[in-house]
Amino acid sequence: MSDLSELNNLLGDEALIHYASGREQDRLSKGAGLLELARSQELISRYLPPPPAVIFDVGGGAGVYSLLLYKNLLSSSRRTQSRG
Image (cartoon, rainbow, N blue to C red; front, side):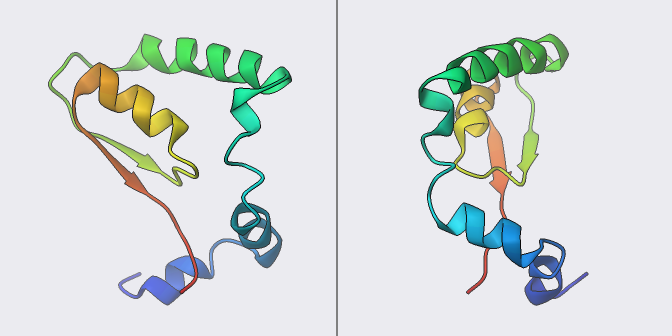
């Protein structure tokens, strides 16, 4: 897959529309999302390699977990798919 348009085709239109709507941006900052965020951070932290390390957050969405990875490892690269 050398072409970015091929990567965009991997994600269905429904998913692209959902992420483009911006609803995912704040989902983990309120309500049940806070519990999901805390639990996911706990699970991710269990398996992180010791710093310094490079982690690729593929499909990073709003970047919430990239921030966690960056703070813990001091090096993180987020890769997302978007049209345009």
